[in-house]
Length: 318
Ligand SMILES: [Ca+2]
Ligand SMILES: [Ca+2]
Ligand SMILES: [Ca+2]
Ligand SMILES: [Ca+2]
Image 1 (cartoon, rainbow, N blue to C red):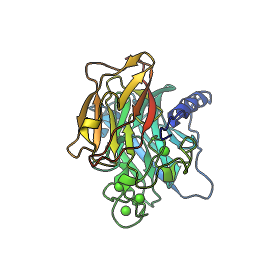
Image 2 (image 1 turned 30 degrees about the vertical axis):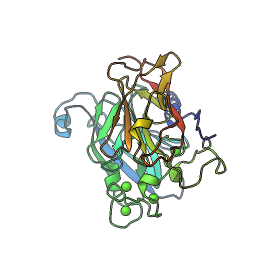
Image 3 (image 1 turned 90 degrees about the vertical axis):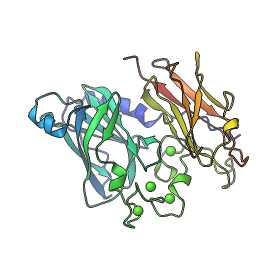
């Protein structure tokens, strides 16, 4: 049985709990999540609305688009800091050599999740890896557009996990273990790669997995268990091989909810490694859980790709 049916409560679910817990502590900055004795690194940035710049922010007294930052690791530990309301600046100390989902909150309500680029050809990612380093990780102006937040300075350009002088954004094997980034597995497709995911409990045991020669899904968007997904968001899959376009059909790539079946318009990148289900004429239903199932897609050379299934929940209507 190769299908991964993933039922896990993801990091964003815990984010919601964190918001509830935080709202009960009456404001102020709660420090937590850094483990004693482990190296830490400071992460800083300024939250801005679309079209604003840091300079404008300093000369106007418009309100900040968020008042709180929450960093959630793969085991749902959170670190929460307040954003300075005078200049919309924050800094937070996080345990290094871990990945985090970083989210922004205003008046106890979710505003946006930080979206980053791991390299020039990756799908968008919501997991920020923080490598150990002496220097601060400076995200610069963080522009909030709808429920996504985009950093001015990409975090992966500020990491060099294997200290070889090539930053993680440019390095094709970040931690220098001989396995290229494109082949690193994320067995539950939640954006935290296996080697820094502290909760792989929903992944199949080694015996169930195929041999190492198998081709597989490298990453997906929306991520497994993502919340607040926009109603028009396309579903993209990065495969570990060039796919046979003819094997991608409404039977081998299904996107559905209990009461809704999405009619995908499939698009392929030039390299045929990324397949996208566009649905411009048919938005997702709001506040609904969708499941994508890939089963029967093959590589150009005929190799069968591992089947997988993952899910996400859409945003409420605007
Ligand atoms: Ca490197
Ligand atoms: Ca890399
Ligand atoms: Ca590697
Ligand atoms: Ca994972």
